[in-house]
Image (cartoon, rainbow, N blue to C red; front, side, top):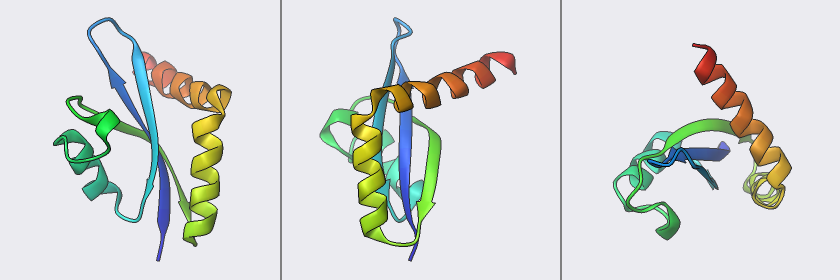
Length: 90
């Protein structure tokens, strides 16, 4: 079974980019749950885009990387900026 660590991005009216990190074994279903306010409590009431995901062969590795990404704000910001720069260039 494959596991994914993902980064979601939401932009509110004030152009403040809010991110959320999680893990799953079904990316499409998980994004749908977040966008229908049935996901994590923090994500309710917002519309999210999955801007990053990384695949792992085992749950333990995925959980370790999820923890690292949640705590490492520099890495999260770097991923967000890569996405935003790419988005603005298009």
